[in-house]
Image (cartoon, rainbow, N blue to C red; front, side, top):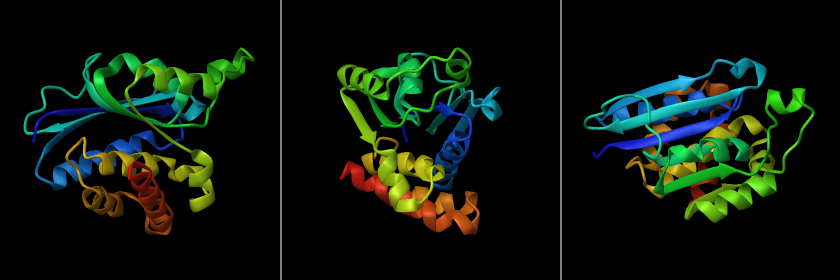
Length: 195
């Protein structure tokens, strides 16, 4: 398997780290090498979270250099814009449409428009897929399943050479049984958005 670098970005509490672990587990189960690294310092306070996942036969380091991410899963539009310099010119982006205002914006009493961020992303990323959080919430009953919708979409695109089944199998080993059905629905929703 050739080297594939995926950057996941969001805000604390969105399940960014869990999603990266599921992707890495799916790759390892397929016999690939996987490295991950997270920046989660202020995650518990609603701060920014970034996870790097690199898989392949050889993985030089866990951190993705700027301009080298083959794909990006963005849990929040503003974080997608902030991390866009990591994405390759022909890279693919899967982003959720709901803004989650970071702590810094709340403290400064400033707001930003998710629509403006999404417009910018669509104008600057050729392979951009937007997932609708309200649809995921209606289907699963929880915004906590958004991470699996993003992973499901990524699996369906085939950009990481991981199949839907690979990811679903890894998910069953990483998610508590009580939450599996909800997350399976989200995974399927994400995959169907690609079809």
